[in-house]
Length: 325
Image 1 (tube, rainbow, N blue to C red):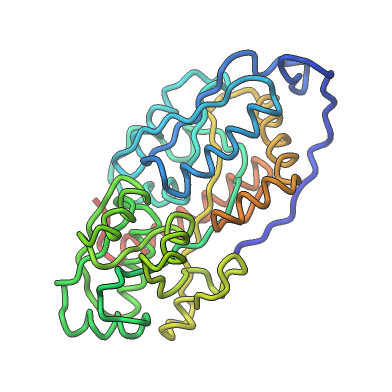
Image 2: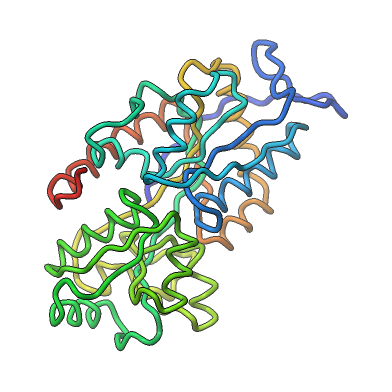
């Protein structure tokens, strides 16, 4: 997984029993409920991360942080809501690498992927998985490739929505493997996983968190993780490179927090520093590990650079695989 140096932002002192935290430069924040938008249905990796951090931020800052799921259009509905929200720190958005992918996937967006938002920090990195329903007669990724080659374009796979890493990453895999499958989009990792568990779709491209418990229960067969190497969070599963010999394949999901453009820097810094503090707690680390994700933080500037880099990287894949809409 991608590693970055963590920049220290300084320590802030909170008065005992205070109803709210004092942000830098004397800005009181928050003094009312904060809404965290999520552009996908509940149960997926982004939703899980949003709820974990919302709980911790509520406890730390003395005001409620609530999750508001607004699924649809690959997360762009929620992104548009944030872009139009007041720049006061009371509406935030938990996004993933999909936010960067959408910049190329859609020929026209109701916002500017860079200019409409103020990056706060990434909060996690996680692997995706390629999995199948146990009824499908394959036990390895090579066997799935072989089956797909024997039935070109007839085997379907479920993913979390057009433009998600589960979609674009799977299309990159299919392109590198030289096979074709039929993509079936859902509004989030939760619904796509449920569809495969129910036998409606045989193959699944999803994030590790919602797939892992079902795999352990024998209801889902994970064939590979999409990281460059095996992830220590689920070391029993091979990487796509290892499982299928597709050298250089990697499709890693980052999850991060955005605010509207123009949000006061003091509020952005307050949130960034609090995420850093939360990530030092053993409980948060254990909770994230249970969900198959690594806590990950960067400065607002570092997060902005990550977004720009992934716009370029995945934009190339979108164009080359003909996914642009």
